[in-house]
Length: 301
Image 1 (tube, one colour):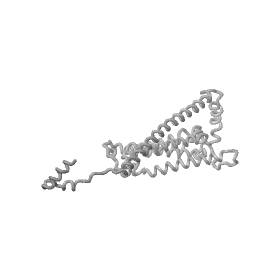
Image 2 (cartoon, one colour):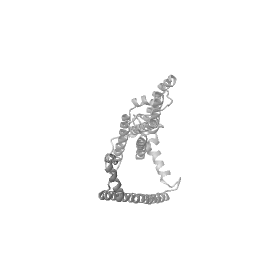
Image 3 (cartoon, helix red, strand yellow):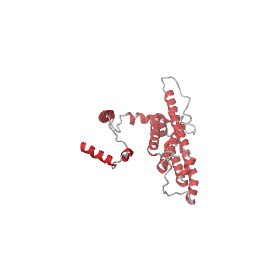
Image 4 (cartoon, rainbow, N blue to C red):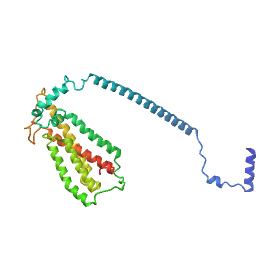
């Protein structure tokens, strides 16, 4: 150390040593005791967080397995107490069937026994099925929809917008398909049909229009805001209407519904079955069209 200092001092005395490089260079970082203690605390916090995450992950897996086992035991036990399939002594093959077929027309006002069953006796099950479609649409939107500020990627896809033959045929067929879908919706309580089938026909008509004239033109006509409003209003009306019917249909509270089944066979009959068919049809139609547009374009708008 002493010899090194002496040699540096000799070079400085002779003018051979310059301090410019050292003055222009960045000062060395000196690790203080405070910085070391802060780093140590950060390491301790990270170690604690990692341990908590591992413990939480193990606990989540453990309780998930326990919950699945308990649920499986409950379901298996429930199935064990269920009656045998096609047993003549079970209510599902005698009492329920006889009630639906024998008294369904007079109680619901629907000529179509299936429509009376799914939209009157089992209307809340149909409401759950409609909400499944709504939930599926929301899930697809969350997973596949792009940001509104992000431009749509232009992909080379074949389009019929410049084909005069296809566009002319679609221009003729689309109104016919839509009118037929409306007919199926409005006559679901009188003949085979209803909300699910009529909504599928309507959705197919709109999809055909989008395929022929392009998704961009279809998105300008059938806007996402309209789809959302129709879907939410349809589900809300269905829920409120059947809640009213369920509450007033209870013979113990003494409140009777002001909605009558009407005359079976007339277009305005079936009580709430006709408007419920329309609500279900709108939900199915919007769901089918939304799925097509999202998978085709990446988003609705």
